Amino acid sequence: MKILFLTPQLPYPPQKGTALRNWGLIDGLASRHELSLLSFRAPGQDAELPSPLLDACEQVAAVPQPERTVRDRLLGMLTTRHPDMALRLRSEVYALRLAEWLTRETFDVVQVEGIELASYLDVIESTARVPVVVFDDHNCEYVLQRRVFFTDLVAPARWPGAAYSCVQWLRLRRYETEVCRRADRVLTVSDADADALKRLVPGLDPSVVPNGIDTRAYHPEVVETQPRENSLVFTGTMDFRPNVDAMLWFMREALPLIQAEIPDVHVDVVGQRPHPRLDPLRENASVTLTGFVEDVRPYIANAALYVAPLRMGGGTRLKLLEAMAMGKAVVATRLGAEGYPVRDGRELVLADTAADFAESVISLLQSPKRRTALGRTARAFVEERYDWRAIVPLVEKVYPG
Image (cartoon, rainbow, N blue to C red):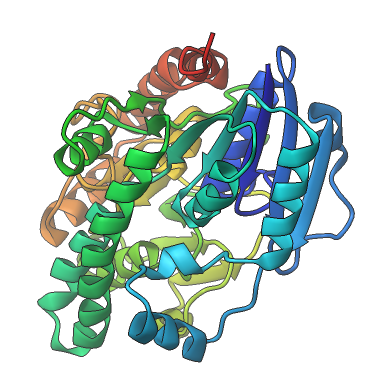
């Protein structure tokens, strides 16, 4: 089968959630199908195409991501009814390249990886031989923005952000509905997201294709190190609002309670582009903001415990799969673990209030045997359910024929 992937950034190297999912699917499908990839190149990504992508795909092309200023985003809000995500990756160069490929070749499937690329449905639908369109909704975006709105609403200092999220929530609800109706197949990462889309589009039958991970690459023995005592780690893109909110809440509300019992606790916040709102954390000797790192695995391996104190967001968090695959005990909020059929106290520990979160972290830091047991169960859980070798066949069932 000839499949054309449209991705918002080059999927290799797979260093964050979107790229991890895109590369997992492409790598798993490449041996059985003829793949092509049309991607954007994010700022800072090397102009030379990575050899693993060239090996996996018959053809690969990447165009620079369009630059959008704050002024551009404000104009988009004032002059259109589209959500910001629908405007973020609009590029005439990308549209022309896509039209050229669709005219030149007959693809069985075009797989649209994320709502940011849904604006190119117009180009796909205008071709003479319209392929089957598979829309992979990485997050149920209207749900994410609704949650951000209600989280920010309780803090007066965040009311401007809440106003923005309210506008985006309502626009995304309309836009996501339209995209799901236009696509031939819709993928979601969890049952919760599938149910949310069904509420938008009665009669829609999304296929759940979970996020996955290469459990051979993420393994407790990949990094030979002894975890540092009383060390915590969080990983993620650190200008992403849910991640910023998670760390600010954890540092302000939970960390002081932990330090009262374990004064030498240390937290590594690992991820690119730390937002200016996180700058006050740099003054805390117990916290390290790493910025971009080539590989998160050593940081996860070096920590005694992984924390995921998320209070907003959607979809499922690949960061949890990374940590659990590496045999780490995890403390997460219920929203942070949403979409995974985990049981509190078995695969990880769930805690939602600052006091409960702090108590769970303290208890696990003081219980090495329990941490080890949780990590082993977590690793087995990911191996059984979330290795790409088990997930890729679920995608193939969605394809025609």
